[in-house]
Image 1 (tube, each protein chain N blue to C red):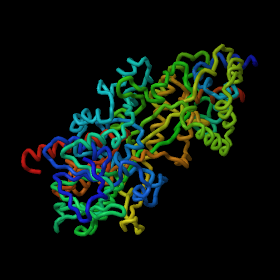
Image 2: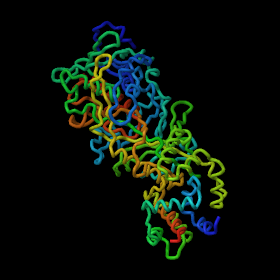
Image 3: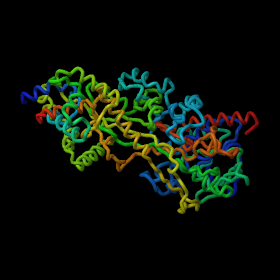
Image 4: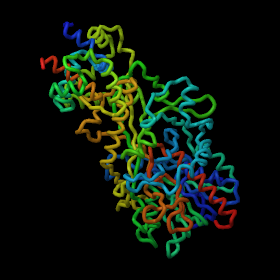
Length: 529
Length: 108
């Protein structure tokens, strides 16, 4: 059932077994997994069926750190949440992402890849993805008739990114939610405060409000926060009636360790060699006739990440002309001119004048009949993991929203480690591309004075702010995604990721929701909900 | 093309893929990279040391060692022994070859 909460009487108390806050992929997956069970589920969504500006404005808050998108543009606040504008790139975390890496402080999940693997399989259909060997890149490349880059598997690997349509969860699952007998979606209901017992060990209710509408409350046996990695810590920090630092924030860890995927676009220029593979499979999704689709990318091997002190990364091998490369080419040329190293006119010439002149020079110089003109430039985009950083935070500020709730500021901080990852990743790619004869690489990333470019792309994957940990001294939730010290408060979101690898987080978020639903149903059967 | 350049061209196999990637592929471009590699200290500036780094026997020329130099280039990339000169990522051996060509031009 779907109800517009604005139609409820002021002061109404919504009674449920499970209260889910947030109607994005995490919340909808959890609700659908619980649909058909004996549990009464209330799914609380801030927005409506469609985008509304006044609701979206509730995300507003200042950026105080590294360059970032305006916070009221980084996520979407209506049914389906940010799946309404995601890319559809579905990937799983790698086993190494769950491991403790000694050099990476705060790394390591309290669960392993194998703990999540079965739930990854079950998450696949939610994203309308193919289920036949979905991440077997060799199988699919062969079947589709593509060659892959012949990489040293000890260093780099080809991987398959699965391509979702992309599934917009609100649109796709509205009918299923409407038809569910035990799940009720409450639209336009904003969570303002989490109430707890006097010892802050158990949640007693969540206060809700509609814009220009009634004030409500939801009371349940269990509460699950399924919003994004900024709004979850915001609500927890705002809920400070009992715990004055915010609910679940006894160790000052809520809102810390903000991480995202950042990207250099492009990180290099590759002039493809004659034996370079056809990069079409890397350059854009290859859609299957029935369901799903995939495209290829280049990532580090797990062993490389265990061996070297770098975080994870991913290269998308876009043709320079098809990436937002027109802009990048201009920037590149300007940078080159500024440096005055004499290369600018050459690069500019090649990029803008791929005609017979280059071939003629080459033929005259080395008495060859080979042409250069048929080869293409590739502008690999480098996405990279940001290591856990205690000082990269979201925190409340004095400015308030229309409900009088304090806004939240983002203070994203990158470290020298991210720069080290960018440089080493670029170096590895350049070596492998050159070694295999796939092309030659030009880049400014490896120069000593390289600094962050004026635009570093963001994945808008808000991770780490309620990180998962074995104990309360190093994180906010435990291995079951239950907030440490609070018996009935849970979180399903990328905010629980202690580290985030190279993979887009959405599939992992859904997998964690499915895992949580199984636990809830098992607990209910055991009478321990 | 000068006779000297033709002789050098015959010896360019180890840097052929690099040369092909140059915006304006020519011996002058390779020499320019060689001079840049020398200037930034990416390769030995001393001819004897450069000769040793390339594994060139006394009085031998680049063309006498084409096979071994090609192998060294491949080994460099496999081992990550690369340098960056004028933005191009190249193997240490390639940089040495370019430097050697540049030094020859200068009569070293």
